[in-house]
Amino acid sequence: MTYHRYTTLIAIAALAVFTASGTFAQITTEDVGTDKLAQTNFKFLEISVHPRAAAQSDAMTANEFNSSAAMFYNPAAMGWMENRFSAGFGITNWIADVTYNSASAAIRTNYGVFGASLLFADYGGGIIGTIAATNERGYLEYGDLGLSNPEPSAMAIGLGYGVGVTDRFSVGGNAKYVLQDLSDAVVSSDGTTEANSTSTVAFDFGLMYRTGFRSLNLAMSVRNFARELRYVQENFELPLTFNVGVSMNMLDLTSMDPNVHALRVSLEAERPRDFSEQVKAGGEYTFMNIVSLRAGYTYPTDEQGVSFGGGLKYDTSAIGFAADYAFTEFGIFGAVHRMGVSLSF
Image (cartoon, rainbow, N blue to C red):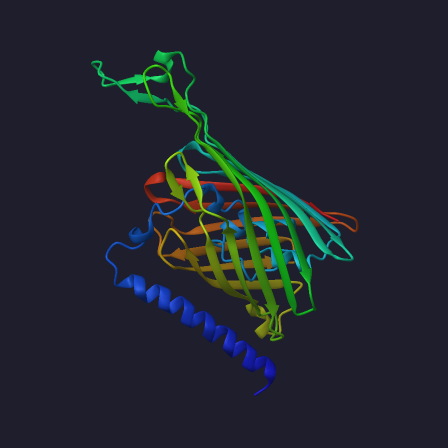
């Protein structure tokens, strides 16, 4: 048996052990995921903002993005970006009328790939602030005190770097300034307020390895590593997440021309700080490097269901354009829609 096949077997076995231990441990739990709920804040950092990834249930840790969007999932994938420059913009219509806007850009140099990213949460209007009172209603609205209603916001601004150390191994990282402002809270009927805003610097790290067996990749990432934060009297942590995954174009096992047909299947295990361990599976079929169809599923979840989507890509000799869409079913909350566009040259 060759070295490459040994590597492949070890990689698949390691992933299988990791996913099985997390999955089977949860199957015996009646209330899946409830033991770790409400353990973190800055939840907007967990939202998937790229439609290509979301359509595959974010099983993208071992997927070579070939775009600046890799910064949101595994910065190591940036190290093998083929284009000189890549940029993209995305919008996520989340549940409860919340919208997430994202943007990213990356440039390849002789010293690696440098990138920048932006994520902004728009929580919409219509939030009415109240404070307990002894009147007939039992509360006063902020407007009764001549105060403005809360206007919460959140954002993350990141700088990333990825480099292919060899043609088989890449590493990458992000440093991002994250801010969450929940607006000042009124704590007494005389209008006294307390600030509810905090910020910090968080880090993402990633590794990616090309096994040498066809297009099989093995990768891992750690996201949202940061110090503990505090809101007034309560400490909390960011949603630290650890992922390990594999990805491969399964049609490499056939005689089909990969420039005509490609079917990349990805499988990964995720260990979040605030939910049970999850298994994510995704697939992307691409025809002629132009049209892509995608689908994915995560287990276990509370309300999130099947995801699917598609994309169109058009390349000229000088520049490339891409448009992507993803749909995720969210049970009683309805559906989540994501759209994105990107260019590269």
